[in-house]
Image 1 (cartoon, rainbow, N blue to C red):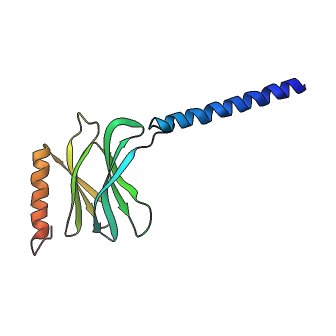
Image 2 (cartoon, rainbow, N blue to C red):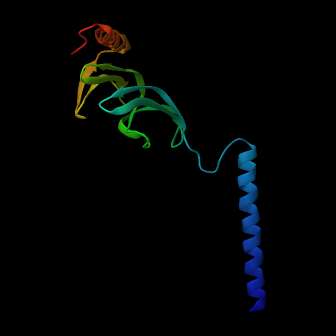
Image 3 (cartoon, helix red, strand yellow):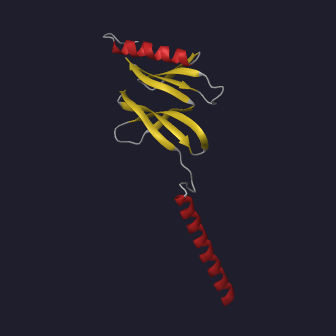
Length: 153
């Protein structure tokens, strides 16, 4: 029985050394055993008592794909996903009592562009847009409306 215990102990030590060496090799090669997406928080705006921003995530469970999420945060809390994921996003504009975000739905090749309006109570409405040009034109109109003295929609 003593030889069985010694054999199991030896096997446990060898397995532990193997996993430690594998983790060190993965780290040395610039990888990881558990891939996480790289994230970038894009410019934020204040609306309805919260901070809103777009988050770009690349990698993780979707290697080689970029994904966008509309995030909101109250005070010092962690940001929470409000909408998403999306395959592309063009920006956030606040006009009057609404926050507007132009996003492209998944999947990447067939997703449609949409102008999402978030009301101050958190309800959303969606307006489909034809293409990226229509997105930029809509956002330009909203920015012009926001900068005008009577910028309410």
